[in-house]
Length: 148
Image 1: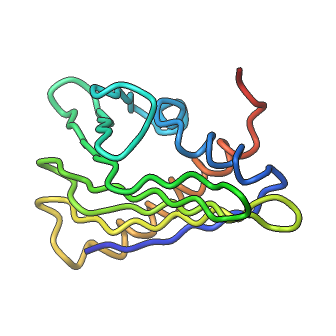
Image 2 (image 1 turned 180 degrees about the horizontal axis):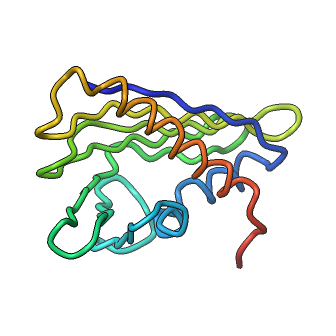
């Protein structure tokens, strides 16, 4: 299983950082060849399912994820989101924590994933690629101008 961790500090308050990093549809604009749908509808809560469809034509696959824990930050407490990946190609889990700091927020994203047909010796490459990809996603989400 490939495991990677990405951390970012932001001047955004924890509630705004949380809103941005858990706006699933905004992720698609930052991940190449990917679109995201939320078939269970919004707002996000435990049980919400969203699907990242990645690829082109017959080479595309769905990466469905279910929210299994949803605790937004409030009253100085960290926000915690846990996701289970339940696809036919990508399996595993993700954790997004948003902690308030004196100067804004600290976002920690951890992924544990397995990609079917990728042997275990490929895990370091998956982890390295994931760190780069999701680091860029977080950088973009946390620095983008606020949307209404």
